Image 1: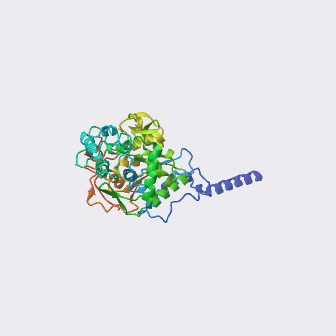
Image 2: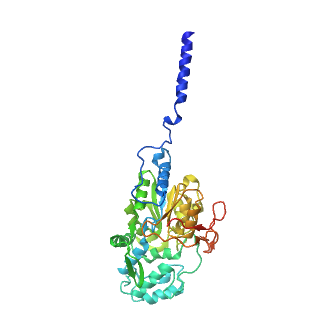
Length: 422
């Protein structure tokens, strides 16, 4: 009996000892690991933005200890990963080096091009050059001016509308589609080569440099943002699958994306259809929207479609819809309303680089889920916006191009917001 009692007492003592050990002492499946990939603390972010991004990386990356598919991060390119616009830089270089080929008809370059634009281009660029041969835009200021004015303002130098007709304003903009269409006749490799040569010039030029195309003055330098390069590096080290989703022509974007360690597979842009190895004016569709004139670009809702279709392999009309948590990006980063849909889809962090764009900043400052990270541009940030963003009235763009209130997922209207990240 004495032996049995001793055993009982011993077991009771062991149980008591086990109960006294904190539950956290035993390793758990979701316990963070040591030496997790860290954002560079020497690179300045506004407020506590770096800490918030680090927290998300730790929660969703390999440091979480969780198994499952790799989390996805998606970045816009122009003014999100770099300062200034790589399409403008490439077009400017091409015009200075006579790389635009004479089309059979300017009207053939875009289904939306107006008769006024067709006439203005034909007059300025002339008809002496045979179709398929280079236009002398380096010397013909009028031709360079018409092309760049249409790119920049969707109008001719005389102020007439360059594009007309019907299109979904949350899926495409004709002037964006027109740039890869202008390079029809070249190979994709040639266009990438043009972009690489423009890249070399832009990176070598001092910050603040201006350049002239025709009589247009525009930025003459581009810089990678050190903070975004570091964020992409850290995300990759933490197991994220990182993509660029840009409204630039894909061969142009590919010339730049390697600078942040991303390959062509992870670079999504406007995808032109090739014929006999050369670019055509036809643009690949998305989500059941047919290939052709460019009705579905990686632009606004079209960026969501491209992410769903190309990354998550969701086909047909469903690609236009917001997906369930497991089929959405963890981090989205953008700087403009053209990025608002996919950035809003992110489940872990919505990075908004502030360029005073209403729909994006309305959502950023409303911060409905507490995961928006609003930050000024890292080089030459915008001044504080005077007044407030018109979120409650005209902050968003409807499919027909009209301006509407910015609404939350539950349909409620976001009130006007003051600018805070500047």
